[in-house]
Length: 134
Length: 215
View: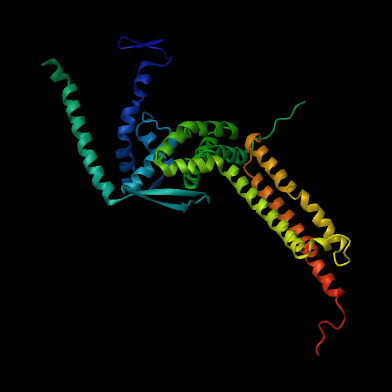
């Protein structure tokens, strides 16, 4: 059992490692799925598995999706015309469904970005050490 | 010494997909996409040094439990609508419904054959039906069998009853049932037509030689 800032952690891991790999709550992950997908698709068109890998890599493994659950979200986004898809054969001969962002998706992403940034800024201000001391 | 059975990845993926396919909430395209995902996942895990069976196990776990996936895809594919209800009903009872349809088709086919014989019987006056030289024994045999003509549909109905109540997996048996029913009807078609026509042919053969001669 390890302790971190007075908290007892029931894992056999160094405190710093535990802090770095803390997982995000399900609710937060669910809320961030659409902006995350849209953001990854602005980099390049991609297929489901690669999308998940990219998000995992960018979040250092903190955003963990149940992989199969992403597809209903992708299909919903497609229905909403945020993204579009196309079945294509990959280099290894395997068929994959590639997704790419649409114009409506870019507009939605812009709005999402503004909203997430305003939340981020608000929280950042609240959590600044100076503001806490004053 | 017992030898280990080699793990067949394709068969395992196929079985996994089959299991998902049992649910009416997955469309063919959904399954295609999930399978592509699983195969990608397994390939990557194998490249990291995992054995095929380990990679498959981890890959399926990462994709998600079938029940959880089913819930998500049900919501996506309109899980609450009457169309989905109808689709689910048809998916669950498709085999039974098909068996019922084939039973109706078989019964109707048997009835048609019986009607052929009955018509041939009605054409010949009752008094002439026994010991008449124009009525061949072949026809009389089939007329005699008419009393048992309800037996084939009855056997088919019993088989359907067995399928509906007891058989665990009746997924593809409807095709065998259909093939058997059709083969049975076609095999009986020719002898019954012959039996129905023979009295007419015999009657015509028994007419005086000059009956149909040109004047």
